[in-house]
Amino acid sequence: MVSKIAFRFSKKSPIQSMIIFLTISVGVGVVFFILCLGTILKSMILDQSTSYQEHLIIQNKRELNYSDITMDLINDLERDNSDIELSLYTSTINGMLVSENGHSGPFSMMLAKGKNPNDYIKYYGLDVSKHLVEGRVNNPLAYEIMLDDYYAKSSNINVGEYIYFTSTYGQNLKLLVTGTYDLGLFRLNRAKGYFDFDLFDNNQNKNYSTSIVFQVKSPMEVEKTLDNIKKPVLDTLGDVKIYSWKFINPDAELINLAQIAVVTTIEIFISIAIFVVVVSMLNYQIQQKYHQLGILKAIGVKDSKIYKIFIYQTFIISIPGIIIGLIGGTIVFTEYGKYMVYPDGSPRFNITFNIFDYFTSALIIIATVLLASVLTIRRLKKKTIIELIKI
Image 1: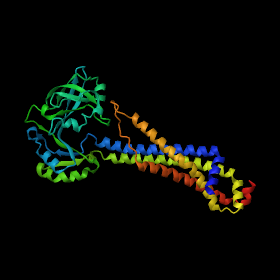
Image 2: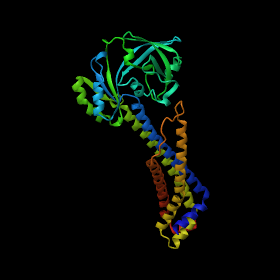
Image 3: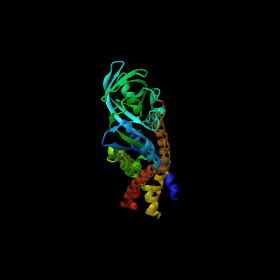
Image 4: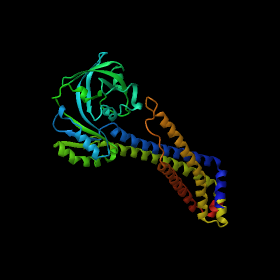
């Protein structure tokens, strides 16, 4: 009987029921979209902090002679630590770059030496097709280079041109620009290129400030790998500094906490808006049905059953609204993911849907609607049967 009366009440107030339905649909859709976006933002914050960058750094406290650079330590560390994916010797050399069109300015060259000539191209994501904006990937065994697309365009440097780099060590390089790339990551310094250490060095007796850098499979658990390599590194190299990307970028977790706070705040405001609408509509519906409620009380229907009538009525409207809202949120977020693409059309992030986001969105709205229903219905306790029938 309770469910039939609840259904009948809903039909008798179509406008109010439709407003509640639309409010819940839009609300749950927005909450779901925001939750999904928060998950993506967390992933993107991690990507910005770790993708194609140094996860672990062994920094020499003294300059190292180029002829002393060997792969022995790297080979040993990779053999004993399965979490290590790529390893390089690196050195940043500053200098001046001059292009054929007359552009001149400071430029940093990241020199790299790995087990294979193309290791630095893989390490810095230059061989990933979605990052290639124009041209082709450079041949690591030739005097060729790729440039950051923003830097190349702002400096009016075109693919196919030659650039001339003069280092602070006195080397002069003539390099063919084979392509431009966009990693989709924030870089403070875009006047930067990557080049093979072996091709750069013309003086085998020159000393460089070098580091050994690693990329690992689990950047968030990089401390485990750091602890594993610390002893063999210190035994082999002596006085060096070993640290992880978390030391370089300690704000990454704070940024993640900030986005969680923003997402939570938006969810609270949406819940408040839904609460106000549901309370207003239910209160109006109850006022319109005071006479019927008074009759029900007069014939012996208990208050608990009357409360159930409005709870049922609310959920009869809410459940379809939640389902429609989740479907709508899924469609909108999917289309948003299709819109966010790299220059080659590939997506900037993988569209994934977590069952937890569906459950959380529904739970937030159900809790909001239930609270609004309970607070509205409690007002009936202040009305006597005679007061209800007279209205």
